[in-house]
Every structure is written in structure tokens, then in C-alpha cells.
Length: 117
Image (cartoon, rainbow, N blue to C red; front, top):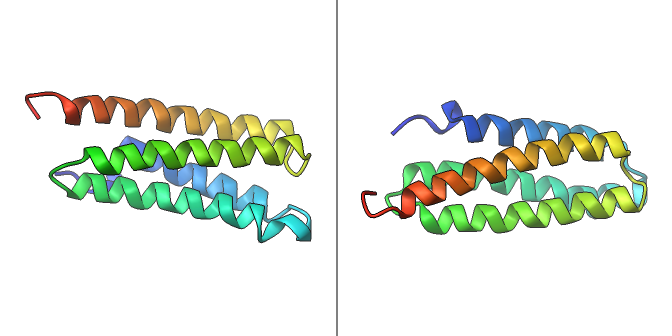
């Protein structure tokens, strides 16, 4: 078992957390703690779920939760863009990272669900 912090999915997810933390600090005060805080919480939970999946024998429940939380984060980011709390460029940067996390988690889930696993 590799260290979670050396996994490519971990590195991309951590980068997403950094980007989200940076862009939510510039949100208006009314949304910084509510919407911005929720986005940050979801991204932190993504990192935690990667660690849990890496450490557990049955990775599927953690990876399924990761994919669900990823969709919530995407929804909140889209809402932030639609409400003009973040720029289109910032949204594009986060969506590029969420796409990478989604592809990697899907591959990991397929691998964990295979009969050989």
C-alpha cells in the first residue's frame, strides 16, 4: 500500500482544495462562510476519503462516497459561478481538477470492483 499523499488522485484533490480555499476567501462576506465553507468542507472530505480508501481492504464504499461528494462540490461550484461569486476562469480551473479526480476515482473503483481485487 502506497502512502496516500503519493497517489496521483491525492495530489490532484489536494490541488483542488488549495484552489477552492484561495477562491472562496474572495467571496463576499454573505457567502464566504455559508457557501464557501461548504465547498471547502466537501473538498477536505474528498481528501479524507482518498486516505480512507487507500487504507481499507474494501475500497468501494469510500470511493462511492468520494464520487458522491465530488458531485456535490461540482454543484456548489456551479452555483457559485452562476451567482457570480467566482469568475468563469476560476470555475474552469476547478472543473478541470474535478474532472481529473472523477476519472481517477472511477478507474480506482473499477479496479477495486474487479474479481481479481
